[in-house]
Amino acid sequence: SLQFLYFIGTLWRHTNMKMVTRPTLCTARRYQSLQAGQVGSANLDWQNLGFDFRPTNGFVKYTWKNGSWSSAEFEKEPYFKMHVMSSAIHYGQGLFEGTKAHHCADGKTRLWNVGSNATRMQQGARRMLIPEVPEEMFREACDLAVSRNLEFLPPYGTGGSMYLRPVLFGHGPQLGLQPAPEYTFAVLAIPVSSYYKGGLSPVSVLVVTDADRSAPLGVGNVKVSGNYGADILPSIEARKKGYPTVLYLDAKEKKYIEEFSVSNFVGLKREKGTGRLVYVTPKSSTILMSCTNLMLMQLAREMGMAVEHRPVEISEISDFEEVAGCGTAVVLMGIKDITYNNTVTSYDSIKNIQSLYALYRSIQFGETEDYFSWSTPITSDIHTTATYAPTPLDASISSIKHSILGEAPPPTPPTPITVDLKTVDFSETPAPQGGGGVKIIKKKKRVVVKKGGMVVRRKGPNGHHEKKVTAA
Image (cartoon, rainbow, N blue to C red; front, side, top):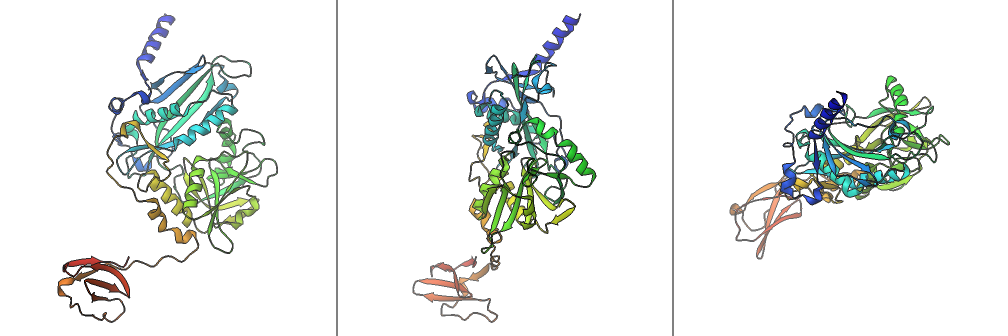
């Protein structure tokens, strides 16, 4: 009877899984047939999702056995079945990643910078002696996880995204300390909004001095599960004291900033002599380099900031005008104050952090040009016609560059002026009193419209019709 029940359970399990071929072998039309629904059709409370697990249609899974990876499987039940002696359970042979997908302004759904996450997972796999996941397979898994859960993807305009959690771990009967006989790679797709309830609202931070995030020559620079497990106790204790997150120092000297609980450290300060903003972020062999931080550094350079990626002493926290944490889940997290050895260093503003955040998010959602090609449309959207033209990156940056360079803000553009050319006497007409008027001068075969001495529009003399002109 037990054998019969096992047979029935196995049959049920396999009928609820669907083998999915590689998208490189699928046409867009065939791939669309695999989708479960339309974007946002689950009708969740998109603005209040938070950062919590929510049931979806399922996840994508691959198995490594006998020296090779299997094809993708779509698993509907949110469980893994593994041997009780699996190395992931006993020896921590596992790692994970975090990336996102967004429904964009042009109606397309895009994966966000998944190539960088694939590379970082490969680095972690080499350190943990786990078979590497090829980038093509990594992209395929993310693509499938989103495509099969489209109804749970927050629609454009809600501010939400689809958080993707790739995970890679060893399993199978293994008593001795050595690599596992089998491995699983899976990608889960979960709709989320802000990691912290206040979003970008600045938070207070406690510097932890009685615990270390990672050890010198350890695995702090790769995204292994154990690094995060060790952070649970210090973080919970800090929350009891009113600090939503903590900041770690290096384990060897307790002198250099490492990173926040789940995000990299970013400080903004002014360059002496020029007033230009400087983007400073710590560099260490024990820090997990955030993929988001790498993009923000690139974006900061485009915005006109100097970028310093170097060791940062804890004594420097008073040198910064603004401080933030950055990572996939939070994007940017404003910092209100940092408490270190009972001394509180406060920050009055996150103005430039907000500008950087807004620009980064506008690229994520396709509102601003993806100049660096960070995003990739899912397979079913590759041939979809775009319905929205994003703002060029330079245009988005120009409005905030004065603050970054330490310059005075640009003057407010004048209000557009309407001039009816039919009623104009083309002899020179003096501007009205008050200095804000318009004068129109006839010069040979053209008409020059002036405001405040600046030419703002030229029109041939035969085009005598009402025309709006502006000095902008």
